[in-house]
Image (cartoon, rainbow, N blue to C red):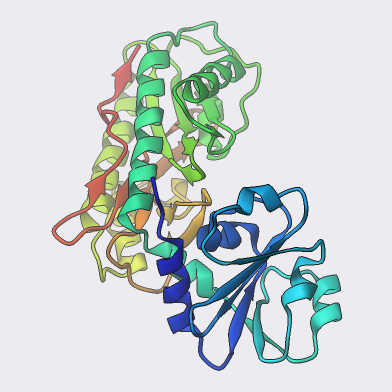
Length: 343
């Protein structure tokens, strides 16, 4: 797949105001603008759209055929800095800044703002990452049974995603069983799954640098009344959040659409995290959905919707999908059923 790096740099150039060029040092932003995935590179994007990439000898062969000027140098930022150049103030180290400070202009979030809205090629990569996640879960979920440990389930799922073509897991898989399900970001342990447990599994595949994110909650054996109650509530809230996704929708209003249902059912104190977040080259990136989040969504923004209810000492439920905002309604990328899976 050919990605439009020239077009991305051109969009950044049009966003430059008050600076002659932007010195980009965040590795993910360098990758977004050039395609180079490295730990030591910087790219200077000028207001006319031209660009110069600097990296060291370890990565120079990876730049062959790139449609911009390339320089080999270990001092990637120093080679490019000049008066009137903007820098990524949120990323550059103090040491590098001190070397370059004269004439530099701090900026915030210029490239991240561009990255928030994805082109169709990026969405295709995310769609593949989500399809790998769906297939891996479908294959391993039928193997889950009492006696398996949380870590064992996580290992099997992560291995299968890689076997299906993922670069690697998008993040450390969460498997939270029984009372551990009350911890939203529980790290899997050797706790064995037991009959009657709710089991929350939060996972995703990374494909060509792009991250999928989804969560499903299942139950080992027939669900108890309280388990079915909170599952159905979270499913309804998640559906409301999905339906509220739209270009120009306020981030906090989308959060409210889901959160208000949980609060009205008496579980508001047990849903204490934001409703969702953007995904792309990072697993958590702009925009974020929450009660205090400002800003409106745009078209073609991949984002998660993931309400939950977490009852201390008992367990919890979270349901999460990755979607893309579209005119006319969001596109769902994670296709695994949201019906309660009873094993």
